[in-house]
Amino acid sequence: DVKVTQSSRYLVKRTGEKVFLECVQDMDHENMFWYRQDPGLGLRLIYFSYDVKMKEKGDIPEGYSVSREKKERFSLILESASTNQTSMYLCASSSSGSSYEQYFGPGTRLTVT
Amino acid sequence: AQKVTQAQTEISVVEKEDVTLDCVYETRDTTYYLFWYKQPPSGELVFLIRRNSFDEQNEISGRYSWNFQKSTSSFNFTITASQVVDSAVYFCALSEAPGNTGKLIFGQGTTLQVKP
Image (cartoon, rainbow over all chains, first blue to last red; front, side, top):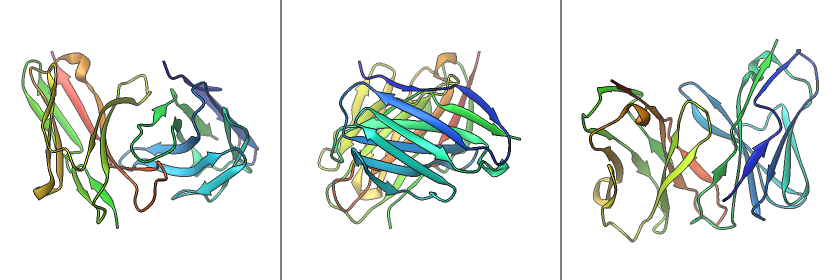
């Protein structure tokens, strides 16, 4: 069974803090993704990584950065958290190629106050 | 440009009713994949089905069925005899093109509420 885990289910941070969201997958997947989910907007891709140390911007990368030092781990970093980054963050992984489904973690609900 | 539209934002039915969730997509690619995911209240998206663009056969899995029609660019999902456990947000997604990136384009999601 594919397992994607995220470091926290709920997180509360203050404006201006640096925030790290961690994601780990155990299926040796090449691709990893970070999304944010907001009501009425569906899932929006923040960043994508197709290999270790390789990353690509998604649709809404502003205010975020990522790190992938090991194949199984993909971190999302909010350099200076702002209230408009309050959201549900979802991590996913998949095998390389467009025919493969993505497997999702349980999500982290981040509140920035 | 590629796009997935789920026009139904919320649907509410009574248990045992049949319900169809609509999905319309836009792509210029000839080879593509379509997906459906379920997001229960726990939050984790669960993969339901994948369909490639060359296979227009309808698929049935228990109470779930999918109708793929290239002529209308639709990939609709029907739940027969709905149950309370079917209450969730359902997402339709399209593989991004060109290229073999593995990225998906998601619709906005349809929230299904099944009342007892």
